[in-house]
Image (tube, rainbow, N blue to C red):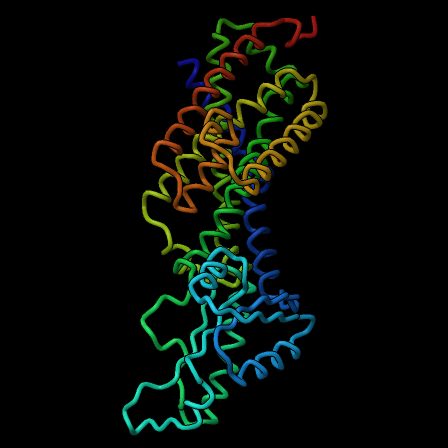
Length: 387
């Protein structure tokens, strides 16, 4: 019953203080407004360096070159190839921007082509990767040039009229690539911010005011005091993390020029469940970690300084784990970072089921160890009373 009373006390402290509500919920609203505004205002010209392979010959290549010259800062390097199969592999691997294949004697056949004869029209094929912005931009530009040219010839050739796959990217590869790289890092940072905003005051603040000492001189178990802090603070921090996450998730499509529906539809129920599970596993771990620092510190100011350094370390490690490839599954044993890597794998569709489940279990195990550490610290007169 004493544990329930301690949990109730923390919830009452939070819900009766409007400033704490504002601290948790306002970041999500601000993030949504700022990111949405940035997405609406971002229309700056990109600089592209197109590397295009061409199989066959046609005068339309000169039209494409002229269109590229009209693009601000864009350059175009064209290389003739006699091996379309090898050229397709280069585009698929990202070694070339695109591949344009003209059917044999393309210009002559266009000049002599008559649709009424029922003979297949000359073909132009453009292979590209839509998840690569540069490749996708070139494809749109080149196809527009060819469409205009075709219109002046009364439909004398076909563009990508075959049954082959011209876009080497998956249908939703772009969305998954963007979200898989950015969201895991943002989720962890936002969760950390939410945990920090309410946890520092809970322990270090009570030490400063002397209210924690009043609790410790009673017969209540130190483990109950620790759990009485961690459980309610984790629930409250989860509210703030959810607010910030929704702000990012709803505004990111606008920022990236995508639709919310397309992004949401790219993932199944299991993916959303794993993201939720990993987030839930990280919240109590971060609350416990910050509580350790807050318990050790003599004041909120001191605890804030230590936690700021800790947050920078978590941010750096999260960025490294997201953008550095080749990290093995051994990372599931590393707290917090395992959640980032697991989320990245889930969003990219490459993570085995055991990875997010193991990361969740590992983070809960670390949380239990930290709670045990807090219990020992609460029992130390030197740490709690400076003796």
